[in-house]
Length: 107
Image 1 (tube, rainbow, N blue to C red):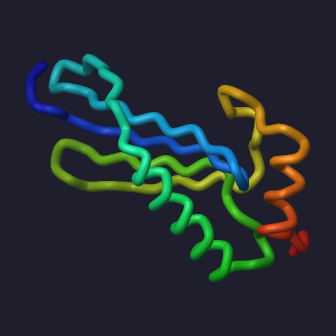
Image 2: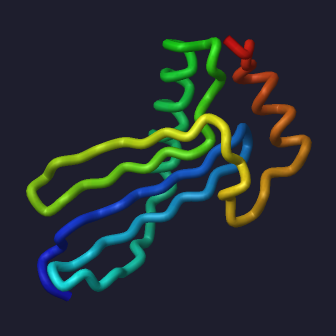
């Protein structure tokens, strides 16, 4: 594989459950998956908690995507509503736990 042209990290979370995927794209656009260390998910969990504390009316996001291009520019996208994108859907218990931990007031 040549030099990486871009990288994408996607994490999907509810309380007690997460899915993490990292991909690199080389200069030709070829894609490869990466082995992810478990502490990376813990960092996203801390970010999720901090963002919820900063804006408690919204609850916590379900999906975060970090994109880095070849020049080192990066961007984040957060989805607070769509739980249908999980590879393995969260259980009703996990969703209820998430809402107890990160309540949404609807404002």
